[in-house]
Image (cartoon, rainbow, N blue to C red; front, side, top):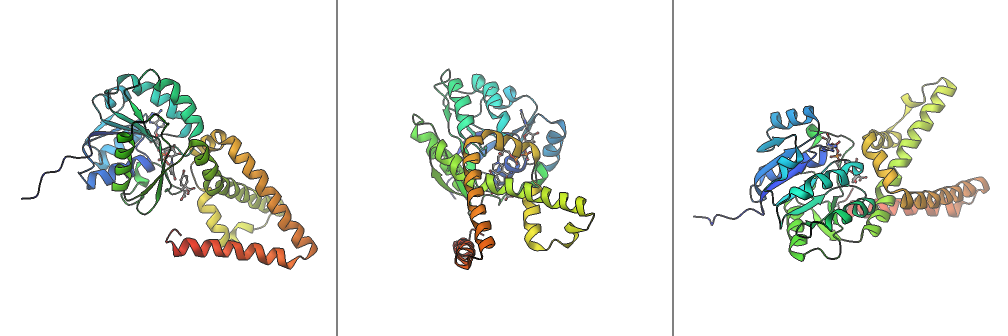
Length: 300
Ligand SMILES: NC(=O)c1ccc[n+]([C@@H]2O[C@H](COP(=O)([O-])OP(=O)(O)OC[C@H]3O[C@@H](n4cnc5c(N)ncnc54)[C@H](O)[C@@H]3O)[C@@H](O)[C@H]2O)c1
Ligand SMILES: O=C(O)C(=O)C[C@]1(C(=O)O)C=C[C@@H](O)C=C1
């Protein structure tokens, strides 16, 4: 007879079972070594009804206070701008020794807002995590159990976090199929500004510019878009609330990298103006090499 194993968590609560939260629930539903009891909590009655229909949680709650009572792990999966408010609602009723986590795409502003709240709850460990995985879709129907497979999950725990709590959240993400790396909130926000936030800013902007051109010239510019432009439109289809919160919360790092990008784009423009083939070809070769190395490492 196989040994019965104790799950990693007894009760795991997901607040905001949208794309990311419902993907965690789906994976945990498939692998009962993750948690014995799964609770979903959402502010939206439509989302709660859909989560119940999809049957991806053992219980669905409207009230975060009722949802987290007795839980040993709570993961906040709401837009960045709402994370601290939800943390303030649940921290006072969480069980001593429990872990609070969140999956927001920006870390410094969230940490700045949550750390003062944690001071009153020294028996709760805070282990923020950011799975570097997603799609342009939102909501509980968009999630899938394999979303985090072979993707990075970045942890940004405060310095005084008990190592055992970091280990448990690391194990959780490994059980989701991800690879885990710890870093500071500042480093996290700079890295994400370049690999995720600036590309989204460019995608939203280029779609708007093309659409304006189509209006001005009263022509079918967008009808002729082949796969290059279409790749930008996939990213540009992402959720407005989520991206508004990301841009406003990672303002400093994003604006610094936007300035740097504008300078680099202007240098490319200058090379085109002056016919500087070396600069043009050098840039293109560099982009190509980056794409190839991602493919070799199976990240593209
Ligand atoms: N979408 C991605 O690609 C991706 C990837 C990694 C991390 N993230 C981060 O994960 C978080 C969730 O993103 P998502 O794409 O799953 O969003 P989503 O819109 O699919 O889901 C968010 C859910 O949170 C609920 N919600 C909002 N405010 C709430 C509140 N105050 N209390 C309870 N529920 C509330 C919404 O009703 C919704 O069901 C965001 O912070 C985002 O930055 C997103
Ligand atoms: O694949 C996509 O569509 C995503 O936008 C996912 C993506 C990203 O930029 O890579 C978006 C935001 C997250 O915080 C992490 C991942």
